[in-house]
Image: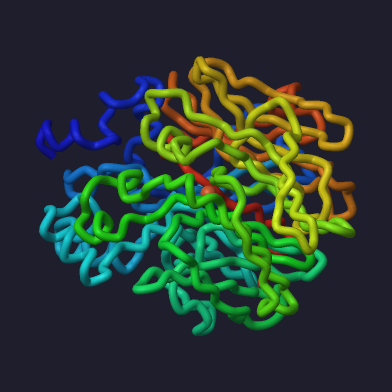
Length: 477
Ligand SMILES: [Fe+2]
């Protein structure tokens, strides 16, 4: 890439903090499972595999992407059993990625010339990167991104290819499926942009075929990164972050510049009864913004969802693009939606601001007590947090300067362990050695620090979301 091209890229090291510049750089090595060097003791009752994905290339054939969201996805996996840890790391070879390999040049995104970007926009050509999340369903693994179909991959991290989940996914399948444990079903949404934008709602029973519960028209093309499912409802909070279609098609500006924050429109609340989707409730309230939800459940007279709340969408850009500035975390906020009314109640749940909120997925869709997440302070120090929503105790571990944790995934100590009794698994980047490792925490004693670390001999680039597959299910067909 030319120096001027590189400077324009948000991924150029000169635009990043020096400690993070390598973290947001290309993967250096692909490999299958190999032993990881251990510090501390991996608990013997922690058995399964952590799968995570994230953008792992900042360029194609020397042509830089302008935004980290464009990066080609790579899966990082850590397999834990009998106190040992093995790690694997491989790029996803999607159809678009393979087409570029064959062509010997970039074909998509901002790595191509502006005329080609416009042609791609007009013709609907894009590359599915699978760089945002991992889902396990029916024993199969899928890499997900915001606005595309799932990409299946196997347990050795070899890419299988795009899937429509049995012909059900017609448009896109978002990167944030949510299980509802008592229904033994995972739910997801998918946007379809066009003359009119629609959102489809998908039901993925843990035993049985996927189906589409229905499609709703939206007033505007928007960004809808996450939603929540409870035992009775699918809840969408559609913030007024509108896609500017002509900018998207004509490739004017990079990712954040394709959207416009229009607070006068307010946030649309959409509550869809799972068993009677035609009885959807929709109304608007004052504008607010969330990237992620951390949970949701039903009360006798209200549907409740928890979010990391921001005043506007600027957090989206700061969090992932201008990494030389401290990223933001949101105010953990309970949104209570009383039945039969067109208003919502906001309640701040804890002092600590969080992102990547998670809880024990065995109670997903129901009331939960233990919230886990990532926070960061103004001096760019990162922490793992546990918030006991019942007692109000906030238990944090601040990583030393130069260590950066990612989303923490909860793994229960065993099938019968109480909610929140288990381990937190987070991939940590250490700038001094330019390597990454899995840090294992006892979820009940976060401030004590990691009880074990399993070290890769290379870094794992950035990374967004992932999933834990317990060993009992790891061998499922
Ligand atoms: Fe996300």
